[in-house]
Image (cartoon, rainbow, N blue to C red; front, side, top):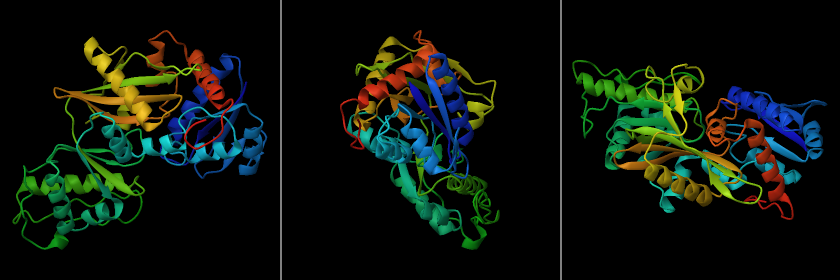
Length: 386
């Protein structure tokens, strides 16, 4: 088949997408397909082998049997490119518009899967405007903390953009002064940081040492810093979640051309011990991060995670593939996130897991494109699947 591999994009995950696209293109060629690379640069310009521009890209895509939107993050993995391909009536690999949009929104994902009976961590979404005010004002920061405590969030916490992946903009906050947030005398202007532009970190909360306990000051500073870091990436909201102390186990879900939905071997993430959590650096730059396939967990837990992964996959309306990530503590598993198009270099987690089942990288990408074409045959585009 003639396969367009769309990669790059304007999100913060551009480089990861380029690596995924190059890996997929190589795998497809080895599987006997003709590959047409389509690169979206950081400015949003589309480039094809025959020229640049969106009209040129449309002609290129219309000349292909199927497209692989190997894009990560906003304006790629969020349903936008999927909708574009739907309008062109070009079959494509992966989840349709609605599922893609929901899965990139961590809060919406939690609402959907929780309604289907999949456990999730406690959390509170914070609109970007409110999060920004909390980095500038003691009063707003304390009001936010009151709301966090009100839903049981008393630390340690994770603060993350509602949209996005690769742990970009995510911070762990472990400085927390207990079950309540003590009042701090002194002028509000002494606390808070004004963000001066995108990419600027908020200034540390600097309440006078004569009027505030060091632990309270440290907690304020940590939370303000985490909010500002998330706001450097977030477009409309920040999510504050309770930390789930335990292990991360990922489950790969793959849909076959005959419609079967299968789970591959799970993967245990053993993150770089020098990183505070499974950060972007731990994922892509560290040599100390280790992945174990299959995850060395009890068979009963493996079966439970697979059931939950398929339940989440179906409830969200996913299609083709997904990597469903769980955090497992003594209290049991909770769903962390669902990646509708996970990292896809040969060394990435999803291909590693299927390699553990005996499926080579070329075989895996071949299954993806054949499934996409089969799903398209005899059906019409609805935005919720072909």
